[in-house]
Amino acid sequence: MKRDFPDAALPLALLMAAIPLSPAFAHTGTGVALGLESGFLHPLTGLDHLVAMVAVGLWGAQLGNPAIWVLPITFPLVMAVGGLIGLSGIDLPFVELIIAFSGIALGAMVAFSVRPPLWVAATLVGVFAIFHGYAHGRELPEAADAVSFAVGFVVATGLLHLSGILIGVLVGYEAGAKVVRACGAAIGCVGLYFLLGAVGFIE
Image 1 (cartoon, rainbow, N blue to C red):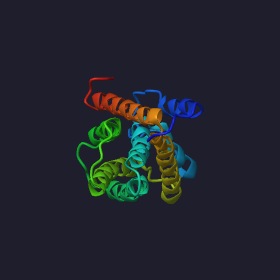
Image 2 (cartoon, helix red, strand yellow; image 1 turned 135 degrees about the vertical axis):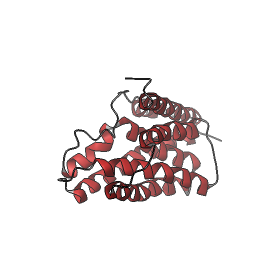
Image 3 (cartoon, one colour; image 1 turned 45 degrees about the vertical axis):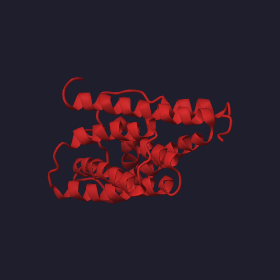
Image 4 (spheres, rainbow, N blue to C red; image 1 turned 90 degrees about the vertical axis):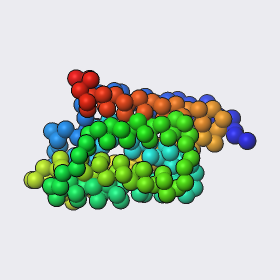
């Protein structure tokens, strides 16, 4: 039986869910500074990346052990592979579309509390991670300190996963489960917004 939802937790969850919309993609390749600080700030200032990272943590927490750790570990590991592909100059199709769709898909998993086998969830997260990593690998300026940038980026990604997990543990409370699903729905809407922008419906 789920516990009563603490009054103090609701404002925190709502604050984390209140992500401002912005039409600017995180993967336009402009304004990427150099080094550790820019690597850390990059995922935090790109809303399409940010919501996907939070969704991974939310979904993992919603699925429980071991997914609560497997999904947030899978994403950055596979994302690093995607980054190497991007740095190599290999072309992947539909990158922005799939990044936008990742928000829709992961948000929907949380909103509808979908509980697939762990390998299915990890595979889905891994596929999206390839494209997120690829986009950032292609953006990395030639003059950038790639190692420092990557360290900052991975740390920020981990913190975004952690924020999703911290919100996701509210599923242990009766009202908290509704808040988590509402966060998933909001993330899906953000993903849809970026998808519409990617196909030219939103300028």
